Amino acid sequence: MSDTIASSADDFQVDKPRIERAVREILLAIGEDPEREGLLETPQRVARMYAELFQGLSQDPALHLQKFFTERYDSMVVVKDVEFHSMCEHHLLPFVGKAHIGYIPQGKVVGLSKLARVVETVARRPQLQERMTETIAELLMNELNALGVGVVVEATHSCMTLRGVRKPGSLCVTSALRGSFRSNPTTRAEFLNLAMPR
Image (cartoon, rainbow, N blue to C red; front, side):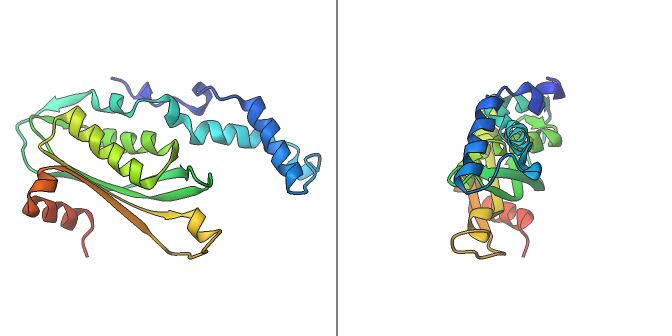
């Protein structure tokens, strides 16, 4: 499977004229003048941005896990600090953070960059952090037939820092554990210690 799976924003077909009309209406609704010089091209910019930010809607993250290597490695593999940007589906504001992923192979190991591509694809959708965490864990468990999977996601949410309660610096941490990561306390502790050392 080639790296062309991750299509560019131009390949993701959104209804850009419709977005442009909607953005123009929003500008009018807040009392702005869409004909003002600084706002003239804003609807087009926003349409292009949404095409980029939401391109994960047109991609299947499981495709990144189709190419694997047969190895007799049965210890933990952990990839930490996979940075991502996503959009909260409640307010369409960004949340940004890092994903930490671990799994114990059962004959299949996957290229490390593929794990980052899975995170990227899942993140580029209107999203909830909780669902994102669960989705990544399920994908790895099912596609790799792993003995166990652990995913920890930590992120800062603009909907908490820019509006509402306005608490900058707050961090949301979610986790999803599957297989031996859930059933074996020693395995779980090893993963959490490697992923998020204190």
